[in-house]
Image (cartoon, rainbow, N blue to C red; front, side, top):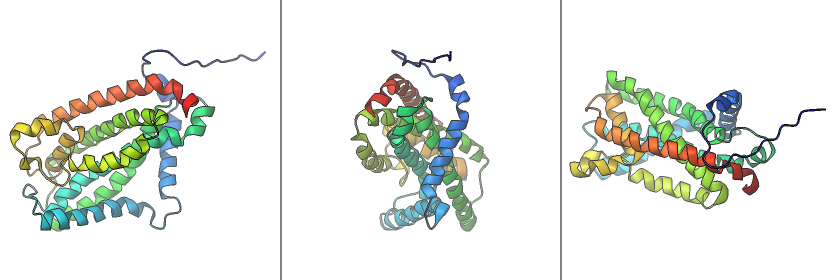
Length: 273
């Protein structure tokens, strides 16, 4: 007689089972690779889109905000200033957008087989790293063109990428779980990302604002990260450790809250989706 295994949802707050996540690590790789293939399948330009999107955005912003609006850029050429801001922002926006729809778009998997559902929004952060790495090559070419040397503080960039990933996945956990029950979320996110970018120092420096309000800007988890990206790469200013610390602390709270909320409600996914 075959042994029957019954999997039942746990009640209350469910801790993260890291051993189980490690057991399903190959599925995480498969989901990430699937996202990459789906994104560029049957596209004429393929991975060139990873370069064209930030470059075209940089060109438009440089003309509108750098040349016409004369927005200051902390003493560096505005194209480089805005491009360094766009790299982490577009990574964040891409992961947030894809992770929000990850559970709903994988409805067949969720309703038919068991696996740690948390892998679905988390996998989007891995797939988008490829785009970030490809787009970063253009930044290197731009720095050569403008004769700007890389600062030793560039060693801080991997930490900033991790913080960006944590913010994106943290919000992605919240919104992907909410999107299962309230499909309005998938329509709100694209609009919200556009508004969010304009309250984040992507196209302007925080030095435009009075120092008394700097902590308010830093409460935006992406504000301190993007503000630190520029001096980390260029070394033209000190790294804003205070605003980076506030943003990192806010991001950690969002991430942990998102993980535990996702774990708490994931037992309803198969019934609602």
